[in-house]
Length: 115
Length: 172
Image (cartoon, rainbow over all chains, first blue to last red; front, side, top):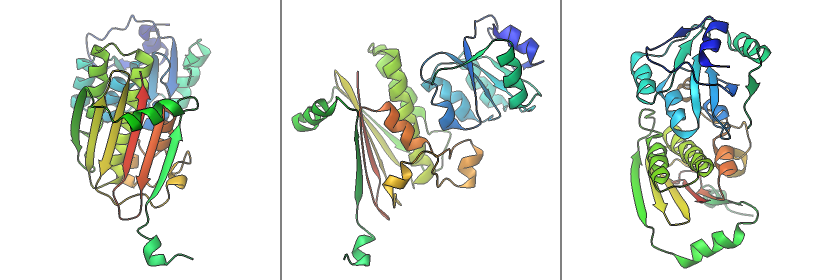
C-alpha cells in the first residue's frame, strides 16, 4: 500500500505539494499520546494522530515515521507543516475519526507496527 | 522512626541495569574515562519548542559516527523522554551528553522541585502532568518506563524540593 492509496481510502487532503506519495507504507500506529507513539522503535511506520503541534514532527527525528495522517479534520499550523517539509515527511489530513481511519486501513491490509 | 522534618528532604534513588550488562556498567563508573565528545544543552522549563532538540542533535551526531540505527532510535527516544520530563515537570535544567567509543552517557540535571516517590513515577500510566502539558500530547505516564525500556542503565536520584538527576547509559 502506498501513501497515495491511503489518501484515496481516507478521502484525505495532502498538506503540502511535492510530498512523496509513492513510497510503500508497511505498517501503521495510531495514538494521541507522544509517549505511546515513541514505543514504535522497530520499523518505519505511518502515524495516525489528532495531535498537530510541532512535537509530533519532532518525533520523526527520534523514530522512523514515514508519514503522518491527521484525523478528525485537524490540521497543523503552517510552521509545523514547514518543519515536516524540511524533513521530507509527508502530511495528509482526513475528516474521519481515528477509529474509522484505522479500521479502513486495517481492512485494506495495512498491519500494526511492531512495538 | 525517622523525624518527619528530616524525611521530607531525604533523597531517594532508583537503579535499573539491563540484565547481562552489570559488569560493563560497573566498569564504566569505575574507570572514569574522559569522554571523546561532550555536548551540553540548557532545557528551559515549559518550553516545548526547544525540548527534544538535544536528542535530535545527538542522534544526528552519532549517525555520522556510524552507530547502528536501532541503537540510535533507543538513544533518541530515551533522551527525548528525559528532555520532555525536564521541560514538563521542572523549573528547567540541562542535558549533558558524554560520548565514548562504545557508549553514550547522558545526564539530565534539573532545578527541582524533585520527585517525591520515584517508585510510583516508574509505574506505567502514572502521571502528574498538568493540563498544558497534556494538551500537547504528553502525560501518558510512560516517560520514565520508556526511558528504562530503551536504556542499558538508568539511575534516578531525587527527593522533594531537590533537583532530579537522571543518568542514562546506552552501549553501541
